[in-house]
Image (cartoon, rainbow, N blue to C red; front, side, top):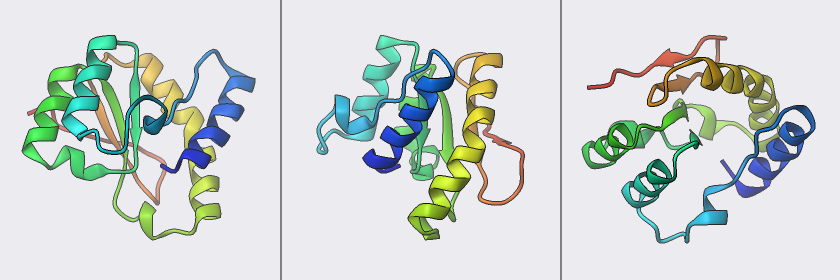
Length: 127
């Protein structure tokens, strides 16, 4: 997710709930490897990942770091990156309340893919 989109979602989220939205680059440098930031956020606790990079779920090293972190994660499924910015923004605004509600009602450490089409999350296996 781009920093501008994260900021826009953050502004909307601040108007509706007690959650905040922080782009990865606000906490970590661009050189920080996925396993490092995932591990650190896991140590801090109380974070939920919303990522446009579903490859984290497939790369064995990064997947292991995510599973060990105990962080709940929502990964935008393949296809989101093929969309234009305004379509991504509209779809993410539509999905956002569902993401927040799902994150609030499940046990930490669960993972989901957010599809481009459809209205249901795809739950990721924890193996």
